[in-house]
Length: 427
Image 1 (cartoon, rainbow, N blue to C red):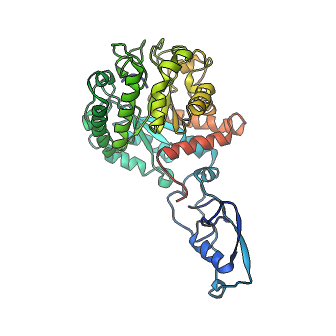
Image 2 (cartoon, rainbow, N blue to C red):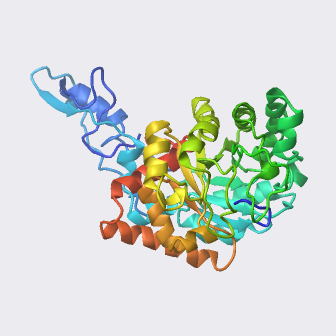
Image 3 (cartoon, rainbow, N blue to C red):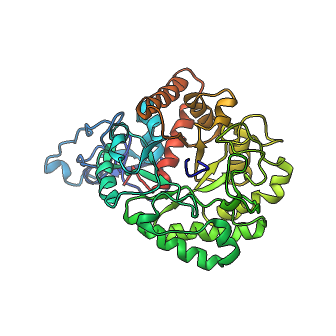
């Protein structure tokens, strides 16, 4: 979005962790086996965990073995083999339905003045909600808290907004105002940027907003307001790569200090773009130029622990003909491969005119984005949000069923959505 209008374990054979490698068979006495089964996370006593509800996840615990007092007595003549099987988010997600996995990769747009409008989508397992508006209600925190109670399994929810500064602030009335990034870059030190952003982030977190689609680390020193023809302008800290790298990390760390997840954007850099992709086809500077000028701020952010990165909808000359958000070369090869980014990859809005101009509907673009390596897709508020969300989830599940999207890729994407919130399905 560019403008302000703009433990339980998966197998009954699992045992508590034992010294040595997972998966190594070990011989133990019956008493030891029984004790572990009673205390462990596999076929032991059923636990009422918040992770065992929702579509695709069974609520029925494994049957609990019955042990008599005598059977618990040591019997050195009897041995059993227990195979230690690691429980991970991936092994748990493998048991989810394709529909629920698909929903976890979708961020649903909603007006910040009526967040209850997406209750049904959140109840169906949407991974996040994206707030739109320019003035948040005073009770936004309590409204979002109520919305979060509808998340299947109570696994939490990404509540995101565009709170950059300057003319792109959606809840400044609640959290305080920040100037345009260009002002910060010209007048504040990195330490001052981090300090001021942290104050805003702390109030965002208090209002139950836990993700900010910022900072913008595009290198663009043009002294103009962002517009149809220029997506950056004042949204950029500077036209100097080094300044953007330092200030971007400072902004990112300020958000993290306030317990808000930053989303560094717009990979691989919109500085000098031909147009604003929200309004039509756009291309970046050539890839050979971006590697020298635009990529270093992303590299710096990744080295500093960036948890999430947004990919732009611009075509990158030298990286193919699709928008970067739909390009496996941009995401899987460059961002994941060469830069080594292991966090959450989100798309810019798939409602952008650049996406439709490339021949994709929002649902088909969502499938292509996931195939390319993205983990979460977004679209604009407008039209019928419920039907659009359903169409996206259906397109993803149909793509998996038809062999056009690997289920392992969908599981991987869902895993990244959980990981950015530090959700562990195997407590």
